[in-house]
Image (cartoon, rainbow, N blue to C red; front, side, top):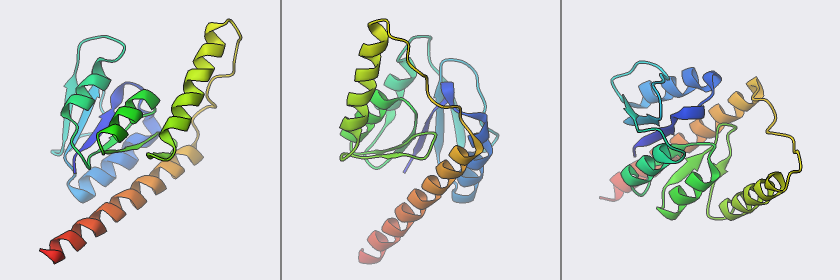
Length: 158
């Protein structure tokens, strides 16, 4: 499994959490963004800067992504593409996107965009807080533990 991070809006509170997981599991990681960013130093982290553009980083992630990989992103259309490629996506607040919930999140996102486009002022997302980082850490650890367990079971069957 390879880890991809949609880096342009990655919260600072999550950087040490993610780096610890990457180092602990020796997880091949690609951080893809439109500008130089750093989530930390590790021999397992590779940084890729794509040209400026609204979805350039997203397109690069989808291009590189393989079945079973994990993407960390708050971008719901990207998460939808990830799920379509039989990979996994976790958002910054710890939501694990799935076939069962991604269409609902996408519909809500599109509805809110239509409302904003009509001129109605809406509240933005709530501020990112420590409890969000805690939920992310729990979801990431649970996901990675489950994947590790599944990998061991497959290896035992061989």
